[in-house]
Amino acid sequence: MTAIRQAFTRESADARRADLIEATAACLAEHGIAGTNVRAICAKAGVSPGLLRHYFGGIDDLVAATYQATSDRMDAIFMDAVADAGGDPRARLSAYLTASFRPPVTDPELLGAWTAFWALARSDARMAAIHTASYAGYRERLGELLTACGATDPGRLAIMLTAMVDGLWLELSLDAASFGAEAAAAMVEKAVAALLD
Image 1 (cartoon, rainbow, N blue to C red):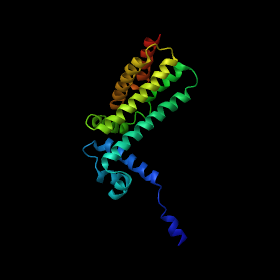
Image 2: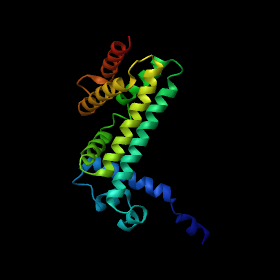
Image 3: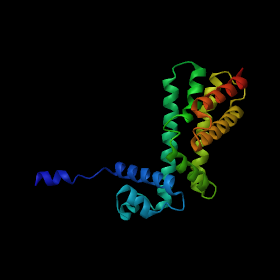
Image 4: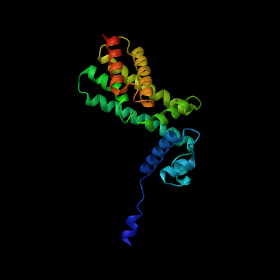
């Protein structure tokens, strides 16, 4: 009887929620917005639709939670890159900007999910709020790194560099053979040098 009881241990609520979020991101990446529904998400996660409704109010809540979780994951990746760069302000700035050109940020599955989030942010107020907060946080942290490098207008520079990094990340994610991660990093480094020196 003890062996049977041990075989049927339940996952924690946090683990179930994380599984559903991961499945949602995978569905968005694979099928886009139109193909992401309760049935597809639950099949990917290996759970019943009732479990999705137990942990989330519905698919809209789950997609919003997935966007927030993905944004938080990206923030952690960027901040880890900065921490690993040491104490030199320029090295820390470079690490923050160029982390977008390396895995896992260049994962094609992330591109699919991220473009779905962008599309939803145009028509859904909650998704737009997540997008606004995420990008404001990214630019604020970038502004702090720019200030540490002596930038005189860090807010404006943060907007310019964010747009550049996003564009290069998008092109690199769509066609990695076109110019490559090292070339993308070199372009950003050249822009930073021109803007700061």
